[in-house]
Image (cartoon, rainbow, N blue to C red):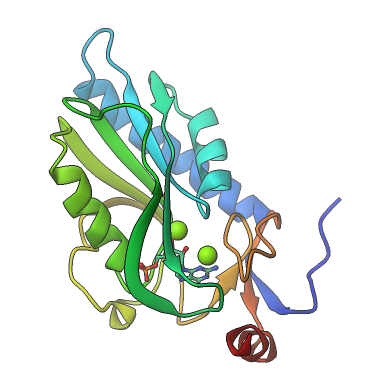
Length: 195
Ligand code: 5GP
Ligand code: MG
Ligand code: MG
């Protein structure tokens, strides 16, 4: 049974089936890469960035065939609404040290690039053995306000200049539960931005 499209959403941009199919492909590419990198007894450390990437991380990790652990990191960059403030803050750090570990950051979307730039700088001071990014969605390059987004090794989908919700992505906390990615209507964007 599929979940009906909420009135705030204009259309489904990426279906549940397309997301799952793409994640299967990403998981096999990632597994293939780390099979060559990980030594006996080593595990890949997945660092999903909360809250937006929780669903992506749950689905991707289940499809990996290499040993892996999961250690969440919570960030805040959006203050509700639909616009980036440019200020990125750590709300909850990883539990374990990533020193000398192979780290794969899982992020929902690259938009302005502030978040990825922040993460790249943050983790580079912590001496992981390797650091890569896997991002479900990438907004068009003209939306980038900073460089540093092009070090993404695995990308799910390139989307247009839209504000999207669903599959972990929210608007004022809503719509994360949708199993698909949907575009927010302009009316809804205006409504949430005013708040
Ligand atoms: P950036 O720092 O690259 O501007 O954006 C990173 C964060 O902004 C993402 O992790 C996500 O939480 C939020 N974000 C950016 N674009 C969108 C969007 O289209 N929809 C939603 N729901 N969140 C977005
Ligand atoms: Mg995010
Ligand atoms: Mg958000």
